[in-house]
Length: 523
Image (cartoon, rainbow, N blue to C red; front, side, top):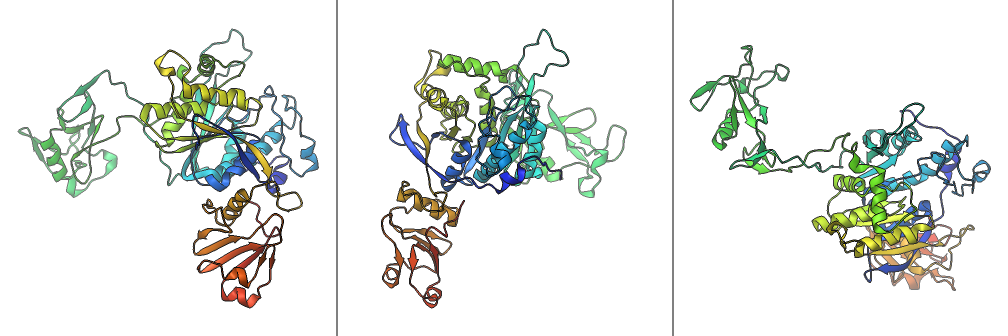
C-alpha cells in the first residue's frame, strides 16, 4: 500500500504530547451535562478525553483547515525537533513551500487520537477540498486502514457561476468517510423517497409497475429445484425466457405458493415477477411480509445539490445573530453524517468545532425524534466562547419566530484545558487533584474509566485489583500494615513511593509494585 513521507513525519510519530486535565468552567441550562464544549488545543483536548471516551465515540465529524494558504492557520505542536520548532507561530501562507508538510504534521497525531476514540462500529467524516484531499486519503489509509475506506463524496459548495475564471471554477469539496472497522460498522438508510406517486393496497405502499424478477437470468445458473411449472390465476407459467430458453425460478415452489397466497405476484405476458413494496419485505425463510425502512441508501451524489452549499451555513448563523464567521458548514450536512452513522443514543465528536454546527445538528435531531445523542466540541480559537458556545446557547433557548428555530432544549458544560498531569521532569504536578490523578492511573493500566476515585483502591479489572497510595505532602509506603487492608483479589498492581515488602512476599500475594512517579505510564 502506498504511504506518504514528508518533512517531520518521523519526529511527529515519536512525539507523545503531555496529558492535561479538563477543567469545567460552567454548565448551561442544567446543573450537570454530558455534552461538552472544550476550549483549547485539540491535540491536548483529544488526549484528555481518552480516560472517559476511548472506544466510545460513534460518530466523528471534523472540518480541518483546507490549507488553501488564505486561512491564517498556524502550526503550534511543540514537537522536540529543531526543524519543526522553526515552524512555530508562523502563519502557513500560500507560497510556503513546506505548507503540505506542516499540514500533515498537524493532522497525523490528531487522526491517531480520533481513531482511538472511535467505537468499534464508529465512523469518521472529514470535510476537505483539492488542496489536501489526495494527501488526506493516503494519510487515512495509513492510520485508519485502506480497507476501512467507505466513500469520498463530493459536495456542492456554491450554486453561483462566476463571471470570470481562467480555467475551470471549482464548486465542490469532499466528504471523506472511514469506518473504524467495516466488518462491525453499519449505515442507516436515510434518503427519503418521493412519495407523491405512491399507491397503497392491503399490504403496503408501492410504486405502480415497480417489480423484481423471479426468473433466473442466464448468468445465475441452473438448478433442478427451481425447474418447475407453476399455475397462477388459471395459467401455467414455465421457467423459460423470452427466447424460449429453459431457465429456473429463483424461489422454491413453497416460497412461490406463499407469494401467490399473499397476492404479491405480478403477471407479465410471458412470466411472473414480484411486486416491490416501499415499506414491506417478503422475508426469506418465513415467507411472510415484514416491515422495512422506507428510506433509500445514500449515494455518492446526494450532496451535489444546493441544499448543502456554504451559503446555507452562512444564512443559518446570521439568523442566529452571529456574523463575521467565514464558510460555516450547513447544519443539514452534519445531520446527513449523524443520521447515516448513529442511533438515538450515540456520542458525536467534532474537534474542529468552528461555529458549533455539529452541536446545532445534534440538538435539532434530538428535538425531531426524541433522541438522546450527546455532543463533544473542541475549539482552540478565542471565539470558542463568544461564537461556538454562544450559538449553542441560542439554539437551546430558541432564536426566532419560525417554528424550525424554536428552542431545542438541552444543555452543555464548558471546559478549558487545565494543568499538565506530569511535569517535564516526570514528577506529578501537585496542582492536579488526586481524583484526576487516580482517573489517569487507572485508565493508563486498564483502558477503562475509573469509578472508584475516592480512595486508594481504584478498581478491579480482569481479576487485577489496582491501588494508588499517594499523598501530596508525605512519602507513602507499601508494607505489611497496608497489605492487611487489601481487598481479596487474584492479583494486585500497587503504586506507592516506597515498597518494603520482600520479593517473596510480593510473589506470594501476586503483587506488582510500581514506584511513584517512575512507573507511571504515558498514555
